Image (tube, rainbow over all chains, first blue to last red; front, side, top):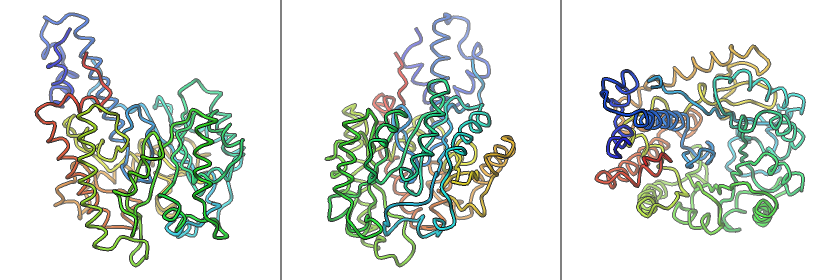
Length: 73
Length: 370
């Protein structure tokens, strides 16, 4: 499996995420297994969804409540 | 690997099925706008049509959250029942429901509706009876606090709905008083924020009140740090969005997704970027128009919001604020910016606290690294 520290970097580094999205082989090399690539892909997809959620939401009392999974509002 | 472009799975549509309300709360901006008298409630026929039109127009979103607003939405039960009934004919998860309510309509039909739609209930309750009843009264001046507590009990008894308590902080009722009160109600989450007040309103915050509010935000921030460190679910999420932006290394393009990811629909079927903005100057179209017309108009409206306002050019918080709420800025202007800047500052403190060990913050994302 991809290391936790690498996944943490994927989560927190937008430049790395962009590079992975554009040319994953260039970033990951050819040593990663299929399951490791899937693991990275899963994080990228989840981060993209999360970015969408937080970009869409305002933060005032007039805006929505906690309908997102982790209560982002 | 996926596209580098951010894809949004969830759209939010705030629907006012009526502007009418059974209360006359002193600080209500809907009453101030004078839109109540000129509006008829949404019919059940139009409500069903709205659902179908949204499904077509927002086909590029996986989920659509319908947030019922008003006016008091529960005063137009036929339209709400039509919305939920129609939504249940779509695949599970296509539509979800939230409702902002004053919690004074006690009718078994209400609780059946909330359960059927598995609503998230945002319940307006300012504080204990003397605080709540000072401003939240019926048309004939009767207090409502006891009724709201009864409503909360009934939601708990008859439904599985999540409840968020919502309190308006104002002169004489501070943030650090409102939060413990909301916590004492046993709600799933809560919000307490400063009242939107035009200049000179007696309920508005004085300069001293504002300073207290800003100081209180720091106290709330320290409690949030304690909760995050202890890996407790946050009940107060006011800082979560700016904290997550810092964690992900992103900045806000606009204050919210109004026009692109969220829309407002009036009782007559007008489509707006948000139900809270002025309809006369922000109208995108009508729900019965060809869908692409108002979707495209909304995107254009959103683009204008990503352009930096002159007032924002030197603001230290713009990267995590995105330019301010267009609905609130029209009323509160600089006062709102003062609050937002402070919230961003506290969010930066929260992030800095965990800078050397971000794992507790990763919990906030809901993403597992295992």
